[in-house]
Amino acid sequence: MPVTKPERIFDRDSDWNALVSFVEYAEPEPTLGVISGRRRQGKTYLLTALAESMGGFYFQADESTETEALRMFGAALARFTNAPAPIMFSGWDDALTHFFSLAADRPIPLIIDEFPLLMKASPALPSIVQRHLDTYWHVSRERCFARVLLCGSAMSVMGGLLSGQAPLRGRAGLELVVKPLRYRSAAAFWGADDPTLAALLHAVVGGTPAYRRQFVRNDTPDGSGDFDDWVRRTVLNPQTPLFREARYLLAEEMGARDSGLYHSVLGAIAAGNSTNGGIAAYVGRKSAEIAHPLNVLEDCQLIVKDHDALKSGKPVYRIAEPLITFYQAVMRPQWAALELGEAERVWRGSRPRFLSQVVGPDFEQTCRDWAILADDAFDEPPGEVGSTLVVDHAKRENNKIQLDVVAVSPSLLGEKRRVLSIGEVKWDRVMGLGHLERLRRAREVLAAQGHRVEEAKLACYSGAGFDADLAAAARRDDRVLLVDLPTLYG
Image (cartoon, rainbow, N blue to C red):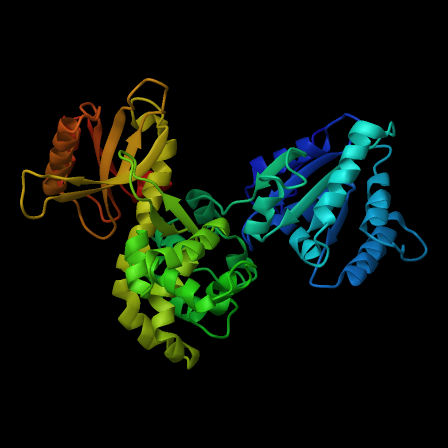
């Protein structure tokens, strides 16, 4: 009989099914799963529900010495087994022997949450786990149904558990990254039936579930007309946890030491400087000096490195967490005033910047997210969706055409990829024939450069809609695609 996901867990069907399938593996040998994801995504929520539903053991580590951690681990095991007193261990080797023995008769989840905190006090712990797994697999003939799940929010540490020459590389039967809710699920989670409100909310809080429940105590905007008031009373209110959350996100990552430099790098990206050189110039450092901060931020999944959809070249960076973009563009420049409770004045002066630097880029990414799964919109399912910059050398001025959404066919050996669609995105501008003509010109230039773009659909994405002439042109030409907010959120 399938293990039903508890009603209190919103969405996450795929994650839940993967966890249940991992635990239900029938062979009498231990298996290892590694669960990671940025903070506030609901990993603990998932894992505690899994332990409750399948009769498993759950232990959450915290900052402590090795001796204290072993003491707390022994106390948790005693509670789980109804032992009369806490179990005392001489070391982690002894503790894991007992830990694995809990599943001698049936598959059960054995969960250690915030595993990087244990590693901090006991660096050899991954090697000890490896030794126990290998002993059961290659030496011992004992039956063991241990379904060991190691979880953590420190992305750089968790990513290193299974990479390179790490002791646990090749040992995991499950590697699950719990990601933010996709934009449609986020809208449903916030109860945002109005697509405009859903897009504005996503630009601030993204798809992080905890920001609705714990951080604003389920205070949601009462329609798009309440959005500005909601920002002032929650995000810009120094009395709410959400107010300082963006600052804490970076501070919590173990690899981020020089917080000033890291915040400056994020500020540069939020201001529209997306290349290594542009970021370096903005923060006043040499390009080589920001390589490490960029790598750390990428390992922590606070930024994403995108590559041009049509040509190789220098990568561009974008912030992965919308709340950080909001903080850098709106809050950080006016932090002192906000701490004094001047949310009204700050928001009044910052709202235009919010629309251009926060909502605009987030809406572009939402359009790309829509396109990658919009199989019916194109001639075939896209293999990749990105952006590119087209330079029209026939013109001396205004010769650059930014294509925000470029859908290309899957990459097949020996074949040049087809460009399925090229598109432009405008959040707060009604799009017209001028935008369509620019896309037609971009298609001509790309064709002259040798790209397979002749049959590409020309897509206009707008948060404000389309004028009558453009709508009429789309009705006449099935190679013209118009995507508005109801389409994105439909």
